[in-house]
Length: 46
Image (cartoon, rainbow, N blue to C red; front, side, top):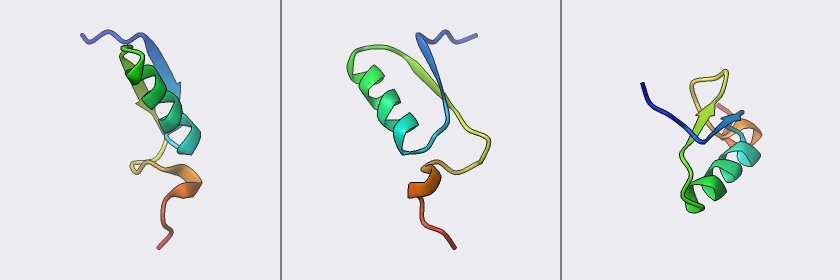
């Protein structure tokens, strides 16, 4: 089983930014979202 330092709920713009800052600080972050694509409102709509 993998271990993480932080769990980010939501893979929208803010969640991905948060996970990026955590990773740059040397922490292992797990990002969870209810949808199969990331980006939230920032992703292109079809």
